[in-house]
Image (cartoon, rainbow, N blue to C red; front, side):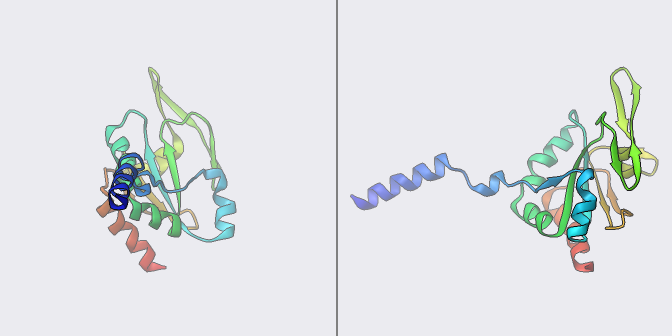
Length: 161
């Protein structure tokens, strides 16, 4: 009887309480927090540039950034920032103010997303940009990155430190 109760409880636990790893998310910061974060500990910044309408951005949020190993790696080694490319509020960063640039009929882009995400004169989404602690761009990718690919890229920066 005790074995049967344990089996039922185990089944219920699996059914009702999915693994916490499925819900893991890297801690995300804002550009306004960067100076105080860097004073606490010098780290590279990983900036995920996305839009609300981009299906590949959403897919990256729901797969890559929910991967337990990606979450662990980002939280332990980087300062992670999610940047909505269409953010209309000004962003102060690195002694500059980046503004929203309307592009017509309800569209536009924030200048910071443009600065960090433009590769070969083209801004595409999703984009990942890695900045050194001195705010210099050291890596850019303008495409969807699966967790395994993202981990390989980030591992290069961890090994350099």
